[in-house]
Image (cartoon, rainbow, N blue to C red; front, side, top):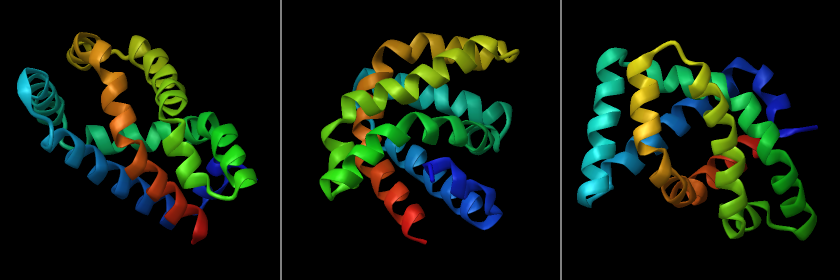
Length: 145
């Protein structure tokens, strides 16, 4: 059974989306410096377009994201600690997640969202890597329930 299989339960899916949205909000809120200001401005712009855009995007991306992370997570299960394994492989994890969003954003008809994403994409990997510990804990909680 893959990570995305459990998303057929609407209660689990709702909880995972809420937790991932909260993680995203927290990650953006804690960013500092010039890059942080840019990301906060871009995030605010996206939320200004549609307040639920990010949660809806997370919900749409979860099945593909979990499919992409499943091999790394499965390796971690074999080593006995999938959370630690995902964190130790944050580089691979970030690449797996960003490969999905890269394809999706290029197909987006929302030019503002696409422009913000493209402008911030170069710095995105390190930020995604920074979110991996929180994401790993969400996945762990999700797979245990």
